[in-house]
Length: 272
Ligand SMILES: [Zn+2]
Image 1: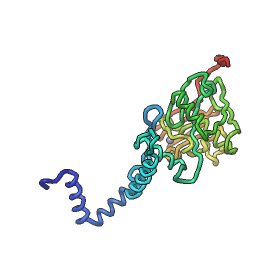
Image 2: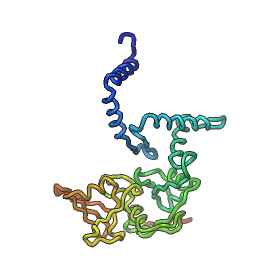
Image 3: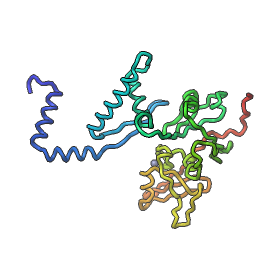
Image 4: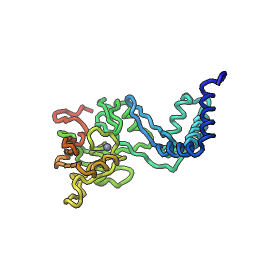
């Protein structure tokens, strides 16, 4: 070992281990690869991170080379973005169906009131699964190229969703979308998976007289959906949308669908 730095020692040790225990090494690779997953971390206001963890090393390396190549190709005279910024932009663009895959629209739920959208007010907006965004950023997203908006009517007293506008790019507005827009995130208290990534579940199972009705459907992420069907867990949905979850140990938790905004009964619309 004398004369070698820690990197070289690690490499030599890895090589030695592979040489004497070939079967064990193969099994470890298999096990490590089984742990691959995609994680999203919410960062400070307006930023988040997405990461493929423990993906196959050769695919990750190839993906990085591709992203890096596209980013460097963009780094011409007039480009002001740094290489780091370009790589991040290229990676997201590829994931969202840019130069990489087939073009497909991605949908996000961004909530803001009309006056903020129009620039008359600067109320905070909310991005489902992330949290609040400043009005300027929300307007930038809402007015971006290719953005399609839809109207949602809320009860001004309760902030609850009453109706979805039909004017949007894909006219399939239906019950499941209503439930997703209303619930925004998984309905288990403390879980923040965005509604688009959730299952719709019958709070009252079919065999006990459940119907496919907004009053009886809730958003649950796959994990919490599975948990619900475990013995000992009881889910009750009240007529006002409040969900009561009772755990096997007898503790109860209530969760109401989040109002889209604070009640605002007395507010005068600002003059235009
Ligand atoms: Zn959940």
